[in-house]
Length: 113
Image (cartoon, rainbow, N blue to C red; front, side, top):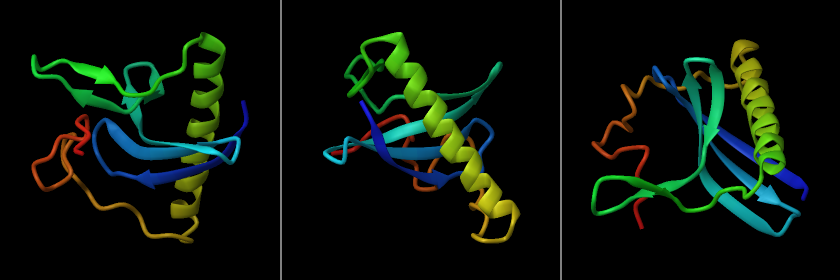
């Protein structure tokens, strides 16, 4: 598996640091990955949707540890590179969004179709 493209959208939030879209082998896109600041550092959360019982279910996810680690390393590296672009003034900083919100009342943990 080759991640051929990673796009990062930064957020200025307490825990949610950004969204990512990845393209695999120039053929398949996964949108809605989240870069989250956890107790032990950054990690990625897979795109998910809210079930009727209030729990969340991943829409797409790696099926082995090696693939998850590969995705996480590359997405977090792309996130850090995007932060460097902000710090250098190349792009503007993200606007403050509030705690896990997008400013419009939608939860970032819930994908709307």
